[in-house]
Length: 215
Image (cartoon, rainbow, N blue to C red):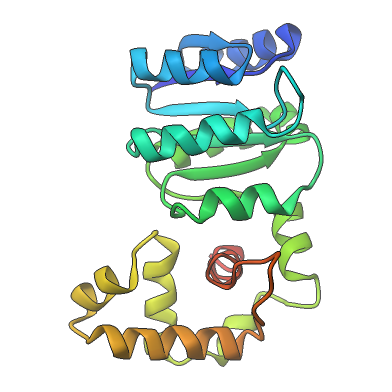
């Protein structure tokens, strides 16, 4: 597996690279800001880009913006975002492009080498990895692992396809249903999981997060 690491702290970047290389992962390039990241991903076409969300020059969301550009331009490149703190809007914004091959971890998880390396492999395998603290913050600790029990079999299957990043049209084709039937199931999912529409939270993303938490 080949990865590019984007982290403005040279020490943290070197530590992450060493951990990965000791685990048999090839670090093909390193970047210190968003522009370098995009340039090096274009050049190397890695399996995964590991991206710090806050990077120079403003230390705001430069890493996220670079990741979104990579996602749009090179969708086969997996993205594992790292954040110092739980910031739900970053996970929400990235997942709006689809959950396949996307991960979001707190930086503290990097010290757990097995967990970190496993997350990189899962993203490379086009699966999704979300930090438990991020998920809990977004959907509320009041929702337990049995929250999806309220869904019928069809709705659970539709939600599983949503978690893979499939659109309603793609889900309809996979399940041999009409798009209208899929939309009805999606609406039912939102209602049963009590996901009310709001400007801050995208209901489709939150439904996927609820699903991922139970799998």
